Image 1 (tube, rainbow, N blue to C red):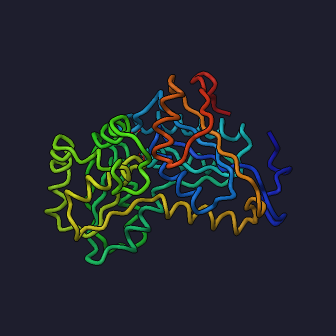
Image 2 (image 1 turned 30 degrees about the vertical axis):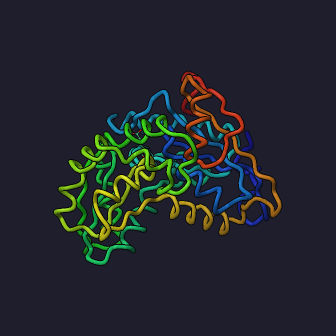
Amino acid sequence: MLSAQDRPLVGEGYDNRPIGVFDSGYGGLTVARELQRRLPEESIVYFGDSARCPYGPRDQAEVDRFVQQICTWLLGQDVKMIVIACNTATAAGLSHAQRVFDVPVVGVVEPGARAAAHTTINRRVGVIATKGTVDSNAYSEAIRHIDAGITVFSTATPRFVEIAEMGLKLADGPIEDYLSGAAKVYIRPEFEEIAREYLEPLRRCEIDTLVLGCTHYPLLKALIGGVVGRPVTLVSSAEETAWDVAHILRRRRSFAEPGNVPAAAFFTTGADTAEFRRFGGRVLSRPMDVVEHVDLPELVVS
Ligand code: DGL
């Protein structure tokens, strides 16, 4: 691994090293997909910690430890920056990671909060996320930091992670746009009932903007949008995070060289790499060439 001094990070032109992206499983691929769309010349190393998914119900200290381990592992792959493409992990471990590691580390909460604060008109914003993210108050603090006049209503919706992962196994084809035939797999009475139970109280709060505060939830846009109805705008952090990454690379002059042929490498702690490849490719909307397995004992804190 190159030392900090050896890295051509600032002011030296281009940097073809990959961007490291991670999540507890498939959800972060919604962010990776936006990165590939927005920055097509950038290489990506994606790490899905499927063996320890879900992160949502775990305590913050444990998830923070996972973040330290995975960032250490990604730096071993010589990444030039790290995107924590998981809200739960961002809430639990972003600041610690930023203090410890010498590459830029960005999370998804601040970008999502910004998107919501800039979207709401009546200044009533709902946030749905895992229990870990909701308990951390990360979204309400980040939104109010941008606009102290916004009222935030947060609800933990843990079963949505389960539904998002379940739906991937129920249909074929890429979930390219959320209204595609494949995305409609989520429109089922049993899922709608769960969604109504979670979302009705938020509807009654007269929110006009709803943050999908978990990177798995964009897969459920059709389901969630159908239940909350048209006056509510759904926002997620994927696009906004990709913008942030682009700004950082531009300011640090560390874009990949024009014409760079990007590589994408995928790793999972899950036992079934073939399954990760099949379902992950659907979220990414493009095939994953190879998925490699990483054993949990390989993950150590530097
Ligand atoms: N994708 C993760 C997030 O954004 C949550 C999934 C999980 O509970 O592991 O919070």
